[in-house]
Length: 98
Image (cartoon, rainbow, N blue to C red; front, side, top):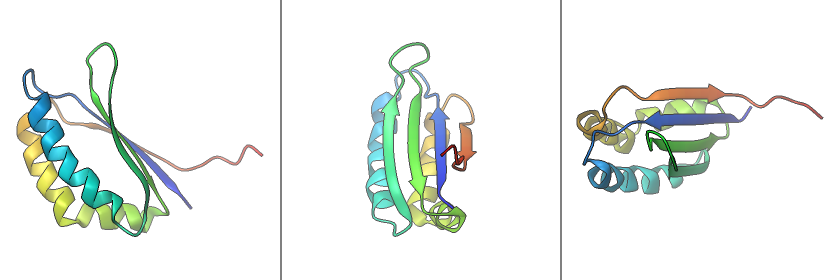
């Protein structure tokens, strides 16, 4: 079953560019993972201007493989110093409404 992950990250003031630079490496490597269907980074247009990771995986195993990857771990370490707070992570599964 497919898995949709949305992660919201609030970055410390003045750290947007450093965050995006670190995220670019993670996003590129994540897109190359076999179980990743979609992996994007967005920025909130108003309000806190949080960064939003929009991720889609083929299944839960692909999510676990992603979280165990070296590039994800390296990004997590870099982002820890740039983030204002712990990220909000929402993991969802599709609902059949057909």
